[in-house]
Length: 250
Ligand code: SAM
Picture 1 (cartoon, helix red, strand yellow):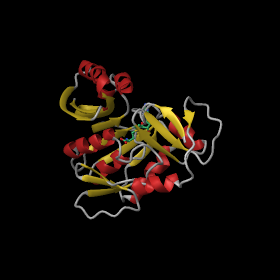
Picture 2 (picture 1 turned 30 degrees about the vertical axis):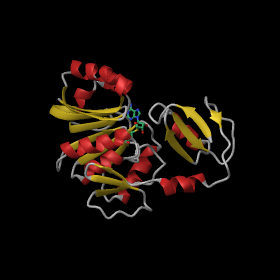
Picture 3 (picture 1 turned 45 degrees about the vertical axis):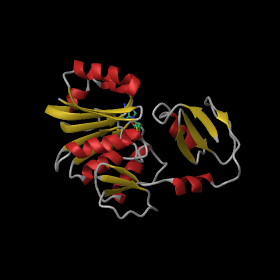
Picture 4 (picture 1 turned 60 degrees about the vertical axis):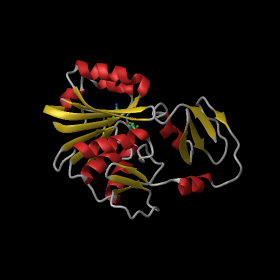
């Protein structure tokens, strides 16, 4: 197992490389990401190898994975059974970010559920597994998911098909999908929200709702300052552990 310092957000750019090089699974631990490989290989990344006893780690990880409830949704893996009343989002975990196990995804699902109504036009910026676009579509939205990583687009489409919804998925960023949107949800990271702040208004018509997460508590101030400078008004703030989700009105 290869230990890298950081979390899924900060190591976002490494995960496709790790999977390309043969990683069988990634796991987030406090301050670290553990990447499981069948054997040691030469890795062009800072970190250290730890020898583990010969267990089927992928099987153990799959066995330990629990369904996640977030607002009106439950996120389950294909092998889970669930009899609750929640809307089931079935996702094959471990392929792209967005299984519902991260605080930021859960908060975004809760915030979306409060704001989406049938026919709301929703943009999921940084769609990953497609989970937020899928959730929005389940609530009746006309949803589009975009991601700069072209590798996640077929995964997001397959996840949507497994959930019998049909959001559009496109490679690219804020300009890739044709607006205007009523709601934009973006689970990225604080510095990227600050960078994108001057472009966020262009996604909307006269008004709209912007849900931003992926923000660490100590960077919240940067995001709030940047969004307020663009005339967005804070509607709601969520916090889970050290992660923040901000809902704004334009
Ligand atoms: N939306 C999912 C969720 O909430 O769990 C996945 C979020 S994941 C933290 C961030 C995703 O944003 C990654 O799939 C990454 O490739 C994508 N991304 C990073 N920078 C981006 C940008 N500038 N525009 C669009 N997508 C971006």
